[in-house]
Image (cartoon, rainbow, N blue to C red; front, top):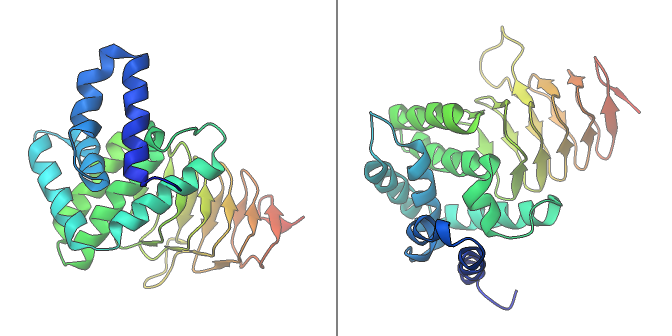
Length: 240
């Protein structure tokens, strides 16, 4: 890119203001008045996650503090934005996921919660998990490990369990569950390798591995490992 991604986002938002003047105060407050991508994302999240428990200002303070302590988060957010724009045909601008996509916003909330969890601030991490589930419709346990460069498209109904691990360049669509089998303890959730696509309403259960570049067809139930590059479908899922 010839320009810094933050500058590109600000340029996009200025174009949005030109097209829709009634949103100028909103867009100025959340983007143009901020001095970095992290500040802007924290402002957007705070505007949506606030409740009787914590005000917008207090939530932004918590999220920014976490973002600034976890050095990798800004790059993870950038990688998420780039992956969204490159893989969602409906996403024309980097600013779109920040402002309007529940999947990006839910993932950005998870990234703060994950750092809180790793800092043994479990109660606050679970608070953010709960609020993200209520507001964005995506329920990601803060202990899960999700690399930067992941797209959760639409987000509604997505559940990602505590010991799940998701590598970069993974696409997850609405209604997907990465869960346990109900009676296990310890490491009990799926491991998703890079390049995997998991289509709508699929369920993947147990400590199993979905190999690189595999595809899980919509509505599938996956109960065993999937090899690299393979497409599976059905209940239970089988290679096709």
